[in-house]
Structure formats: structure tokens, C-alpha cells
Length: 117
Figure 1: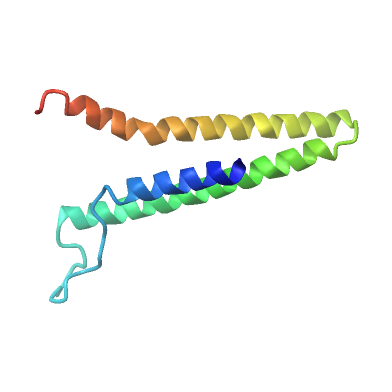
Figure 2 (figure 1 turned 180 degrees about the horizontal axis):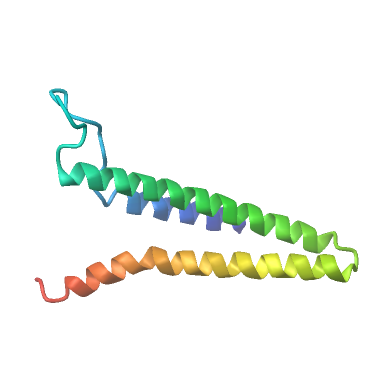
């Protein structure tokens, strides 16, 4: 179940990443600044954001697993249980915020495109 969840996240990240213009490097005849157009600058920004998203999901999964490990091996120690429970809550809240932030661009695009055929 966790593998299915993680694979669906990765597939959604890759689908979203390919929806934006990608940076392919400077043109062969670039004789000055490597970025010639706005689309190339946007491509760099999108690539950095995509990388940050992937790093976030990896860290979130790692913290969730670590919190679960702490919770399982607390052995009745109230301080360890409290720490593990707090980590699980923070991990769940951060994932929820990330999912909401991930959906905001498509909501805005759909809202803007309501009047267009």
C-alpha cells in the first residue's frame, strides 16, 4: 500500500513536471547570457521547484518512517511516545500542506480558464 502511494506521488510529480516548459540549455549560438527567453528562465525555475518537491517527499517519507519506528520501540516510555506522536502529527500536517500547495496552481489555472472556450 505504501509503495502504491509513493508510486502515485512520483507519477503525479512527473506528469506535472512535463506540463511546463523545460530548460534544455542555451542555444548553440549563445554568445552572452545563457538564458535568452522568459520560457528558458521559467524552465529553470520549474526544474528547481520539481527537485525541491521530490526532496520534500523523500524527507517526509523518511520522517514518517522514523516516527513510526520511535513509536513502535518506545516500550512504554511516555516521553518517547510523546515525541513519536508529535513527529507523526507534524509529518501528516506537512504532507497535507504540501498536497494543498501542489493543487493550488491547477485550481488557479482552472479558475482563470473558466471564461475561455
